[in-house]
Image (cartoon, rainbow, N blue to C red; front, side):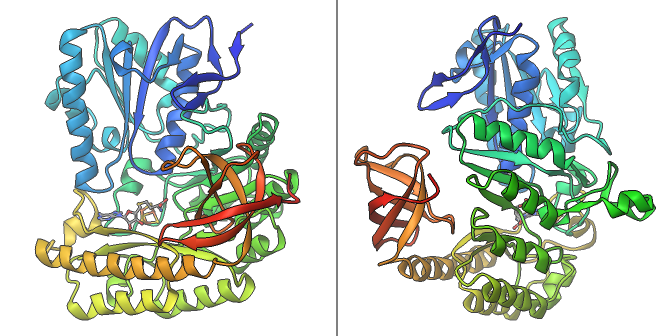
Length: 481
Ligand code: SAH
Ligand code: F3S
């Protein structure tokens, strides 16, 4: 029998499911997208069975793992700097082993072991179940690599160990990989083909989270709208499924419906939506269930039809507007956020102006904006020159960020005077006397603590705002408690 310590406090956060009998210590650091943070919880779970408990003190760890991101060059540089730091610690403590996980591991494969002598283990995103063997190899003094991508692996049968958790909100991954092949993007190469996780295992994980006191789940995938379960296999092979499989298939709208019905008091979010794959039935499922949050992260990358095409984004500017109009018609108070890339190859000033005018139309609530970074192996890197000068990229990016800042403030101002349901996540970063939580639109709300507690749903009257935060006062519990 495993002895489980249910709540083991580490710093400000809870780490669930530490095993008292475990002797070895794992330190794991994650970079990049939410999926990486979620994957690290799977890794921690697999290694918990191999005798490892997590620690937040890197210096005391037997095994240091870094879950890496390749999305932009800067992300890789950050990881390289961390590896240098681990190297310094390793010189003092030679028993410490270091492993690289995730997208950089997949992209650079065994090159890592040659180039970066400090790395003992290289593990791609689909190979985490092989960690017990890989750790054993490293224990015996050999370097270990597994970067095989899988057509089936969804880790649906691994119960994640919740790391750095506030005990209130959790990620649940529903798809892995991506089939979209946007020409700038390294993800299809590092995370492989798209596959969906069995809905039953998703619902079981959600039910388990509810039982443990969690109140919000974010369903994760590179492209959640493309979720399709028909009894296993790759999304691209759905055509070959049997009639029976087709008749009982579950799409993303169906999954949302199942989740929202299974736990009617749990809040659900999801990320990320790709405009070309988002269908009306998803928006309708959101409208139908109060517990599906009214927020869609809907990256567009550019407002120019010519650039969208060059990026292999399979929709036009007009189609994107139609989608936005449909969302706002069906869910008038729905928040929408974007990802934008400035300076994609061949982008002209006119293309850039198209991006700004698209933003002006949508007036996004939030945004994540990046300068184009050429990624080796992608179609854009192979076929196009990275020809927008760095200073032009930076200037365009600044204009995009400034415009987003203006729109974020416009959006937060619309909340003033309203009473909104907030799920309390923890203390405000700036003031210990205040709670921090989010409204359904995912905007951060800060208010005096009074007698309310973490994990409670509270109605808050919004009095003031900045472009990123709503400030108010609680007026009572919401019906959802
Ligand atoms: N579908 C994924 C996208 C992952 S990448 C998801 O789950 O969000 C996140 C964002 O990084 C993309 O939407 C894009 O805006 C940006 N990005 C991806 N590749 C990039 C590159 N080569 N240069 C700059 N930004 C990039
Ligand atoms: Fe990347 Fe496009 Fe997929 S941005 S993750 S290839 S939807």
